[in-house]
Image 1: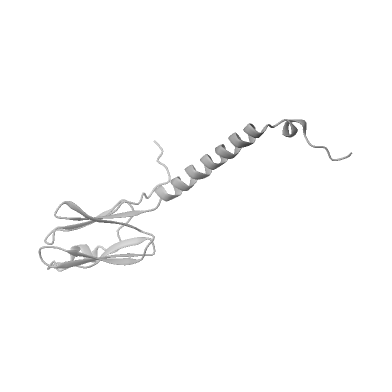
Image 2: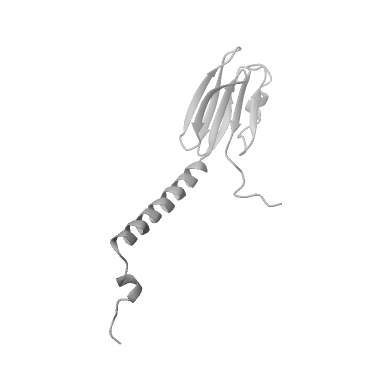
Length: 125
């Protein structure tokens, strides 16, 4: 049987190809936006006000100047923790890596670190 072009492909007009390309571009854009929205964010607050917001993708250390001194917030390998804090009991440092959706609060220094990444793909009721 000889190879034949299917009749419905041959009947597509230039406008049809344009709509098909626009639809493909829209689906690709929405998919890319969804993967960017899944990118975890770290929100750092100083005295209750937003001090900094950063991505979990970039390894870095953020210095937060609190009333007692500087706190160091470390972001490494998609995780976040308070690496150093001048508070006397070091509770937020001992907490370690903050789980997705969790937070660490250094009360004497008035610094709060929130891991705004979602720990769930979906929720079922």
